Image (cartoon, rainbow, N blue to C red; front, side, top):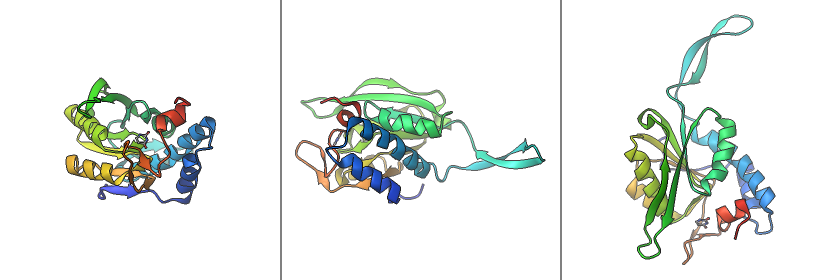
Length: 210
Ligand code: URA
């Protein structure tokens, strides 16, 4: 991918996102829409994956059929909200390998601290898609990319539902080589670090917690 930030403006994505933003949308609908939108975002983030031909035999004849090249993709979910995007993407790319990164924010330093990190083997040979619905300050996203890079991954993409300008700038500064795909670049962060207009706490909305 050449662009640092891609906003997926497809009408289906925008329509579903608007329903998700609505505070009156139920947990069940939010979850279903997240699943649907993750298919559409996955389509966009994988758009330029290289293909190579493999010789196969159809019921009629032999042919050179295009298949995605190289090792299986790695999908890495940033807990817990990343799992909502992950489930939908796995429906589209069921053979992908999956990793999880858990980070919490130290309330004194405000810096992300790792509490879980389990990644697939051979990360250096895989295209890695990091998923987290909300790119807010960018601190935990940048830290997650640090961990994925430390595992050897070289080609990394970041997929989110909403991005704040502050988070995009932080990622560009820390990881200019990691393209971001999102459904919307929102206006700003508020004083509590929430994306505005946003959709609230993505984890709470998808899991029905508060
Ligand atoms: N995380 C969320 O879930 N929502 C925001 O608005 C920002 C970070």
